[in-house]
Amino acid sequence: MDTMTGAWRRAGWVVWLLASATWPAAAGGNSGPGGNTGSGSGSGMSRPINLPVPSIGNGSPNGPGNGPGNRPPPSPNSGSGKDGKDGSRADDTGRDGPAGRDGAPRREADERGNSGTARPGSEAADNRWQRGERLVRSQPLVYERDPIGAPVLRAEITLLLPPDADLPDSLARRGFIAVRETLVLGRRLVVLRTPADLTLPMAVDLGRRLVPQAEIDFNHVLLASGRVEPVRLAAPAPAVTASAPEPVHVGLIDETVLPAPALASLADVRPIGRRCNAPPPQGHGTAVATVLARSVQQAGRRPVLHAADLGCGQGAVDAMAAALQAMDAERVPVVNVSAVGPYNRVLAAVVAAFIGRGHLLVAAVGNDGPAAPPLYPAAFPGVVGVTAVDAQGRVLVEAGRGDHVAFAAPGVVELPGADGSLRSWRGTSLAAPVVAAALAVRLTAPDPVTAQAAVAQLARAATDAGEPGRDRVYGHGVVGLSPTALAAAH
Image (cartoon, rainbow, N blue to C red; front, side, top):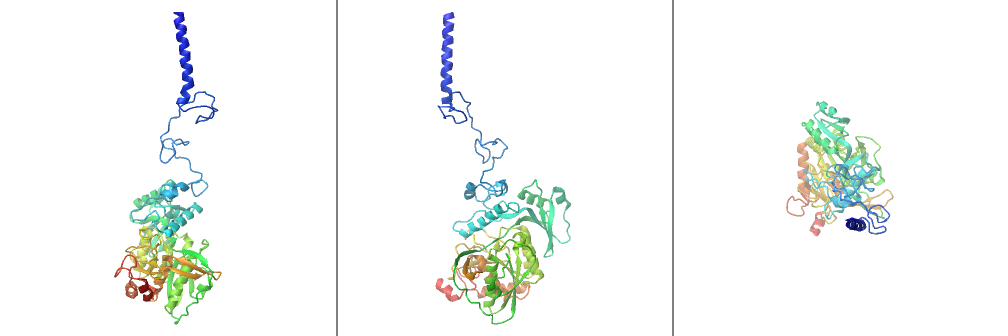
């Protein structure tokens, strides 16, 4: 019996030794020096089995802290600030587009058809989204993104109330703080700082529930709708001498208009509205002002430009509203806007009130391409939307299209720079002032009936292109090109 017991005991030790030698290799723990996937020196000692951890959200399977309810750690390349908040990873941007607040992917489109993605075949659309992305990344304490990826002022919403209405106490109790207020076209425009415990979309939704009688939306930032091409050294084109001294007053809402010599020889520029230390302009406002002044002068009139600096309010909705209020106070009959953004309820109400007082608002339709959804303010009812064509009257490939297009005009122009060279500008930004000038010589004062008559008169004078009558590409027709040039192209 003792002999049998000893034999069984020796057999048990053999089995134990064999199991100890083979189990780590079978479990993938250690297969020799350096073979273990975990830490260790590969001494042949057994290692625990690493069970896979379920992936939570977009985290990696085995990242630190990626258990249920935990966010994955930020990528070293994520975010627009040092802490990586409100940014998108570089490897995600190309796939999903710029992310929303807190890194949420941008929606494809919202309820108004505002698209968060650049459309195929539109380099300008990419440029506009890239400019918005750079804006958010360069100043993350000032800007963030709305759910479709459009830039907005951080932690701010806008609220439009009747002039005699008080700000409801329910907003203050919930943590909203009024930071700016102005009277715009007979209504109170209030900018609210949002509670720290709410994301911006949550704050907009809560504000609409607390104050259903008010118009509430994000404080969207409008971006320019044109770009400059490479410089070509050449002498600037000679200015056209006005044949009549009668002035034409026309408004311009854009970035700061620089005192360029070429513009000073064309027009009397009168800044109106807010004064501020706006960011250094990129020349867009001066380029649009030059086209506007040149077009008025070519009609034989003396241009007087009333220029409002949109940069004073970071290009946001409340700054646009304040500029329209200033134009109304000066009784400027026609106003040009060469900036675009997504649909905004507050801006829609302000624009409707402005048009209702007999003004004409002329706006570029944008450069997001023919398949893009409408951009605003050009697509608001009553606004004169303008698309762009080249010198032969062919619509630019990046120009917007749709039922809101009222007219087309040349959108590729060469303008003198500060160094005397010619810079080629391209986009619907440069087409809109051509139409604004044509309407300004027809409308001398704000009046609803006369304003509509001026648009109808210009529609009859425009050269029809594309399908007969008004269409989604050229609107009523082309303004600013001779019928001979159009006939040769079409």
